[in-house]
Length: 340
Image (cartoon, rainbow, N blue to C red; front, side, top):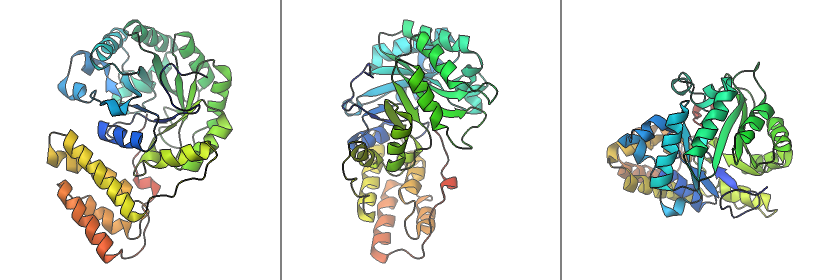
């Protein structure tokens, strides 16, 4: 199935739009490690059309991030159309993605994100409005429905396609599920079989082998990685090898992992205007980078107290010099999910 924007492989790998994670430095890092397409954090249409400085700042991206899409959310078709027009004219990404998947209360209470799924007429109206505001391909990211009673991803997908969506991404959970239970990958397969536009699978990808398994089980046109990229941007390189039938590259050593984390930190330092605030915000990434290392509990405790990027390098150097004490693994439950 042909995508309406440049992709280098028959089965491209996407970095998911994730609030507080899919910022420019992380997108650039994942592109270096083989992400074929990246998407911005989801951004409010109201914030964009009112040119809110904080929102507009998150629209910035560099040439090394292409192919890139800008994801917007909102339930007001007029606001969505105007936001799409501004994004197209000023930032010129490869596509505009509509978020119909975010389950967060502050978004849903205004019918944004997955809140729109309660009214499929509104979903179609929003898609048509965004298409009216841009010449770029308009894509959508959905969940399987608002609730179990309203769960019907094929119906939702067909309505999106009929309204003019060029690509559809499915996270096969309902809004009321939030991030509990298992993503029903069989629903991705059903939507793929029913639609004539490209379908991207998303949900419960934690390892490169999960990417391959989702591809085989769903026959999706592309795979979107969210939480599986946390602290391991090399998942894209490894997953690409598996999809192409090649030996999977080795997971980076501790020294290599620390070097990647420091490279990421330097990119954030250059990108953000507030060094201390950026360092504090980066703590979550540091926790993800050291997940599973011997003595990771103590190491994470130190990293979650840093107030400057300079401290990080010292903590890593001491860890490598002294060696870890004890052997602990950060449980997955400690990793807060932020994907839509």
